[in-house]
Image (cartoon, rainbow, N blue to C red; front, top):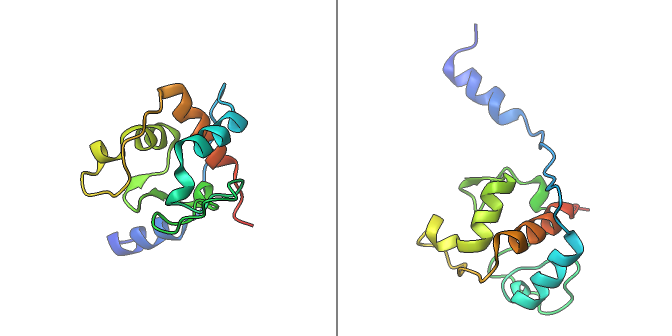
Length: 118
């Protein structure tokens, strides 16, 4: 029998990442939205040559991360909500609310989830 501490270690040791696919979303359109919204002013994002911000951290390995902003589960529904209105989820975040619609946020999430951490 595994005790609570053992179960916690087993859970933390499992680094598998479920696939994060968004049916009907357009990753190429997501990249265009990322560029138009100016996300590169704070984040380093593959596919965005300039600007290359460092305040918000790099997003090149977002698809492999377990958490969004270090506190929310990295799932498409949560990512879309975060992209649309991060301050509603975390009032202390520096990330501003965007003007993205639900469909636009899905496209941006599709692009971010398409990135590899190579």
